[in-house]
Length: 385
Ligand code: EMZ
Image (cartoon, rainbow, N blue to C red):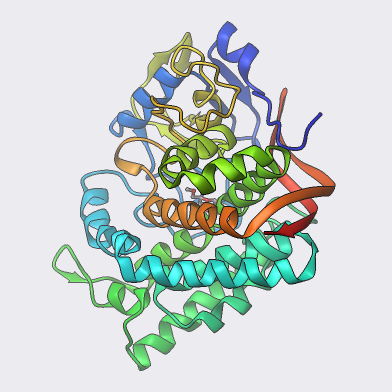
């Protein structure tokens, strides 16, 4: 089997039933697998809440390792709308040409660095450093700060020992607390300062609220971006013609990034807590139980996507939900898309071919469904142009 083949783990269940139970730490989740149900449920913020106990809408649940509410992610409208409006403009900065240029310089430097080496382990030597260094732009803080974040590894809540590692999570919480205090003492023009000066419902945001936005910013776009970059490299390694096509045709990059993110769906699903009992594809969703919106399954739904299991770089109709859907659609998507574009441009400009030396798959375990989401290790040899 080829490294860049990511099969559709949910196909049979999606077609036969549309839903599937998953027992997560004794707080079961019913996974919704069909595109239509996923979108409808994501849209219905009244019936399906994000404002449960902090960590409960995440699968696996993070209630045991987190007390801080992530903002605006774990808030419902109408409060959600006001929080989101406070941060929306900041998270659109990646569209500024100056931001894009700086991002391009970062990505160029990283790719040039690994080209010198010849063979590399992609996650630790390229994807994680790019993700962390790019994040300094989103936070508007010095590039050197990325070294600390790189030392945390791929996920801030998961480690090799455990899927929910409280000690690891504390490193992030303590770090953010300390940064907030530093910025209170010496205000600057970072996201921390902007948030500390923002007003919510006519009063200043609290430290806890600011921390909630920052935890989301650090955690939400970390393993997802890393998997996206690594998986894309595995595809380019096995489809050298695509490297040339993308390099020759810059417009193709725009559809290609959407297609990669649909196909790889780095975030498998996100939960909601049922507020108003209702039936979905035969499942009776009872009040205070959990459902999950399975983006990965929806993105392979044959009733929406033609040849869903193929990567079609110039796919025309691509209403994927890899960044979620509705009021809660990914706040970091502008940054992620800009990074995805810049990465493809620079990479296909500088690299001619890639050989995969070793690939260790990262398989998520969702009960009866096992889903490949990326790699634990991907060792490659890069050949420069
Ligand atoms: C949460 C989530 C957000 C969660 C869009 O997803 O990402 C996960 O990786 C984190 O563990 O806490 O931020």
